[in-house]
Length: 252
Image (cartoon, rainbow, N blue to C red; front, side, top):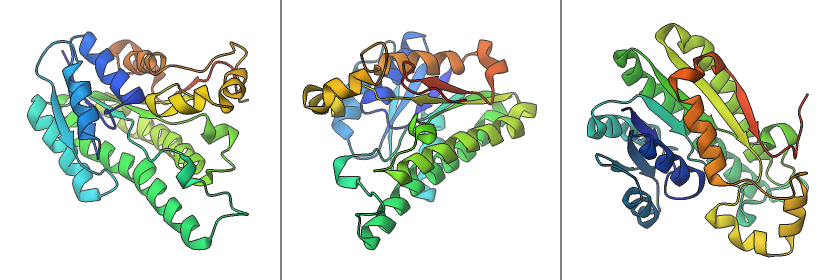
């Protein structure tokens, strides 16, 4: 039985990942920033017992460290970190460089980099302190296909995820001597709760056609990959970035 912190676990990939670890017999800290109701729904859906909820904004360095320390204290240890929390690309956060006002441009960049990269890095630092004392652990970062394909309407998002992938590879080398494996997943479009309306609308068919499987991915598919990458059997995958996009984008 492992102790697992999943950030951003109030819905979508984070919720599916928390459930997948619980089904493996692990105990899970469900992190959320603002969606308390969603986090409680995730918690109530987890198999087994001993799970907990932690709250905080990982974009705040003080809170990022507290979140990890609180999770480790509640669970009794910390063996796995899933860096999933992020500021996602929504219509309200569109910032194409040719169209957006400078103040809005700066604000979106500051928030996305602050959470998606700096926040994830700070959470990882805090988690590593516990893992070293445990003799090892696993970190899985949730990146994005957009890091490779580009995000013209959300350049800060694409850049933050590309940087998160690079951070993961740097940490994989730095932490191998401590028996800590670090990997990343790069999902394409995922049918999470917040995307239901879009998938039912005019964009739905085009989004499905991006993949030759003629569908989009599911949170459970991403969660399954994360659970494998966090397993003892995946140590030799440390440093890898796993594409999960249904062949909708092939990088060379």
